[in-house]
Length: 100
Ligand code: FES
View 1 (cartoon, helix red, strand yellow):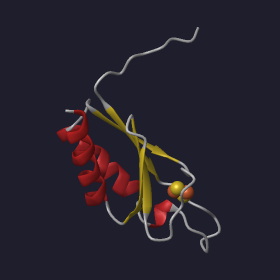
View 2 (view 1 turned 90 degrees about the horizontal axis):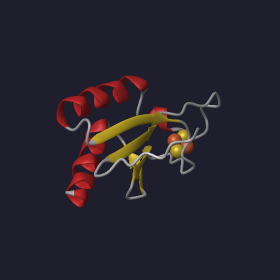
View 3 (view 1 turned 90 degrees about the vertical axis):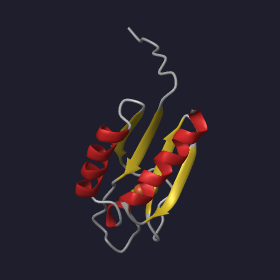
């Protein structure tokens, strides 16, 4: 049975950590590795969980040779060109300002 859940005043960040066998193509784990994602998850757990949920994901369809990609809901904002997790932390802090 499908159940609808109201999540209320929270944000959900999807962090692309996709990897491709063909390393000549763009993919996000060149910029944001699984290890960096784990570090970000620990930071979030300490600072913003459960208000902010983080999920690692595959390709979000906006691959960028200049950096990683994250998607944020409910804002629907996508960010590309991310070079390190400090930039994702800043995105989280900025997105939180919009829902407070
Ligand atoms: S590989 Fe990350 S958006 Fe495509």
